[in-house]
Length: 317
Image 1 (spheres, rainbow, N blue to C red):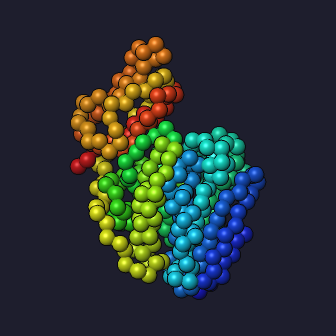
Image 2 (tube, rainbow, N blue to C red):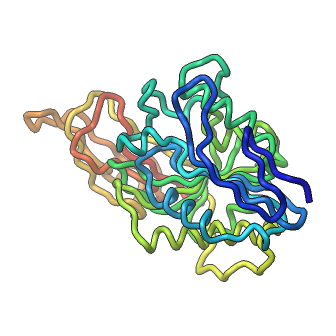
């Protein structure tokens, strides 16, 4: 078994190494835990806090990075918990405060770009290229309610997509979505040949013990499936059903948002999903389902900005 080196951090076989890692050319640093297993195996990267106010995955990663013993691993685990430390401390939604950019929209990044672009570039070069699988743990943001589900990459090489889908099917949740994006963290890894998943659980700026434990169970089961943890996967109550088509609705003009559905609710074609009104209570626009399906997530704040995200729902086969 060889030592594990990520950027400036090295862990020896059977060793756990934890430290803050500086992002070159920026004022950012992020907490990284390296676990170098005692035996050979795959290297799995697990991150949380790409968006700093999405808490269940962050807490799950912190706890697992404390609890797992590298001496029991066949392979390596690299943890980042959270990536967006400045956003976490500032309690801001979606963005890295230094430049106001959404890290999940700038991959593969730019070595000479803004703070967020440099962070994305470093993740690609120092982390993704050394990983055999990547899990990125998310939630709904402070203003979002969601039903647990998982994205797998859809624009990568088909072998990467299929390996990602196969692992997504192991998770204890109801739905999975083939992504059409390319600029997100997990899609950035997939473009480099690393099978990846973005898992969604929780939201509204909250976290609960049940959500954290559910996340930990899913992560452990993925590690068992990949052979990094030697025990057999825990039984799950369900396996995700693939969404045939995802719909993402955005406001035109901002104002006040009045949703008529909840996350996880089954909906029918033509059903009213919600209405945007102005500050005098006059209707600006109403939104209706284009197909039968299920609500994946929605904005639950009264305020909605111009072109702001309102709701996402999935059509079922």
